[in-house]
Image (cartoon, rainbow over all chains, first blue to last red; front, top):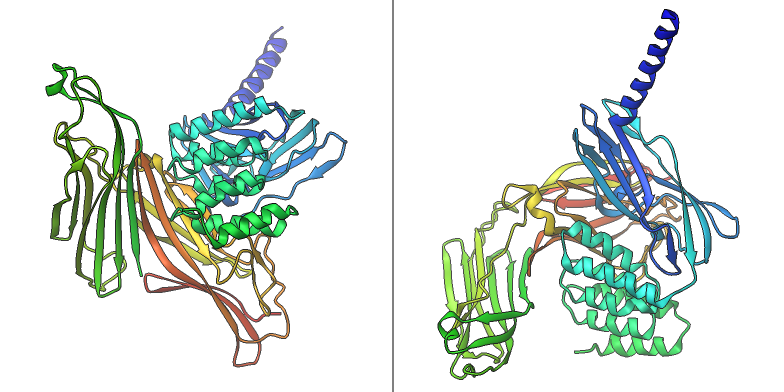
Amino acid sequence: MRTVSRALLMVLGVAATAVISVAQAKVEMSLQRPRITLHEPVELTFDVTNNDQNSVQIDLGRDRKENFKITLTTPTGEKIHLPQLRKSGMTRSPDVTIATGENYHQTLVLNEWYDFKQVGFYQIEVELAKPALSNGAVVAGQEPFDLTLNVDPRDETALANRCESLAADIIAFPSYEVAAERALALSYVNDPVAVPYLKRVLLANKSVEVFAINGLRRVATPDAVQVLGLALTMDYTSAFARAALSGIENETADPQVKEQIRRMMGNPIT
Amino acid sequence: MRYAIGCILFPALLALVVPGARAQGCVLDMHPYYSGYATETTDFSNVYTTVLSDGYSTFTPSAGCTGSGVTHQPRAYNVLGSTGGWGYGTASCITCYLSYQNNQQVAYNETGDDDYPPWVWQTEIFCSLAGDFSNNAPGPHPVNFTVKSWVDVGEGDLHIVWTWASSTGTQSDLSGCTINETVTYPGNSPYVWQAPFPSITINPNPTTGSVPGTDTTLVDDHDLGSPPNTNFQKPYSTASFNAVQTITYSCTHGTSTTKGTLFGPANVKRSINQNPNLSWAFTVLEIIQDGNYLATINPLP
């Protein structure tokens, strides 16, 4: 009996240790919306919670995106290891330190890695290239996260609602970081429905104009080009709008859009 | 040439209830669209600052409040070092377009990038009925933007870590701020590096990057693309080109936005030169506050 009790205590002790160990630091990833309609952005929430007595460090790579390794299985069953995202130029510092009792939160827009242009069921595996450390020891983030995403057929109402929600968050401007995350998501709504919302964000004076321009460049319809024409006349955005219009002109097969851009570049809207 | 740009915009609806007039049923239904802009430039002989207050209002008269005789006056405060002060534009009707600019200049002392004289600015609109109602000045913004460290990380990558602080001393006050870069290459968009450099396509040109102001550091990699393209094209020859980098900030606090320049415009020079032993070398160089920051591949394969 005593032996059994000791064994039980030992098991409990081990279990308790395991629980404490797990609770020291925790990495969580989830899709904000596991079911979306075609052309909605796919947003991943990344959280690190530190309940350790020491600070936790994590190296997320360039722009805090490079060290997310993503593998996905498409609706047709194709398994794709996506290249890690690595940006040149100015980026966020890769190193994040999370103090005891603190939480680190980040939203990733997975469309930066992959264009989810097929309707259907996706399996997405996300893992960190480098786990979270405390005093040099791994404390969390070693295991991959298996996520599922359903992409339903295009629905203009759903798209408009999503755009409205993102634009409202940007204009409310709780912080630049939140506005930039939402603007990045909005810029990946690769659908004509997004154009009026991108225009609203472009003109809102919330420091996220370049995201709006990138979104308009992706949509590349005559309406999107027209809004880029407005950006062409604004001091801060003019050079970016010009580059976006050049890009559309080079890539579009639509002769009307090409002509529209030529006229615009030669004679900007005033 | 260093410059700074600031602006404050007030596009929000303002429904003014004028206390002195309320007993007479005078409620102003007014939508003001006034802006404040500030710029700082130097030609290295003088430092020049301008502060512009401009805009207009829409106005719907109500019973007992026709707006007749009420005027708006643009005002701008511009003090550079110990020079300058308030300046006042012409008072005009509520819906008239107003514009007033206050200019100042002082001699430039070339003792370092941070030795510009202190500059304080503000814009406001004075209403003859309601008093000041667009009284705004720049909010918290990044200061002390400097290089924290730098390293040649190999493969032609000049890796610079920049750091900054908040004008208030509290980093979280910069939650409305972003730090941005623009790098412009010498040509159209897209811009393709020419031989003997690797064939790297810059698309779009200019490139941009941004980080939240609440971060205390950012990294800047002047590299050979991502992943790096080190396929320098033979036959090698002496060649160089400059990209121009400017780092700015933009801070939004409530309905106001302030913008300014933290660094640049500065050349990022990439060059290929022959060594005395006839081998070839690649260098990327940026001069920051009179210091040379560079990365090399020497010799080229």
